[in-house]
Image (cartoon, rainbow, N blue to C red):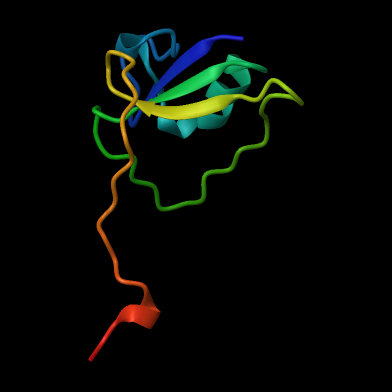
Length: 95
């Protein structure tokens, strides 16, 4: 079990061992596997956009009672909120 850092394009040696050595988002599945059961994958939310045009496939993870947690953090490890533009539900639109 370990903490693995991920950024949009990676940084440093791309090992995921720290924000300065973040793994690239394109290797998310490998990062989850490296974190192992009970580990954590931290998506560095202040390092740019995670733009993808293809589905993100995840084929590994934790185990019963020891999931791999994925969360958005800043470069110091502080949790960050996910924000998206407010959109009206189709049933509430008028006009």
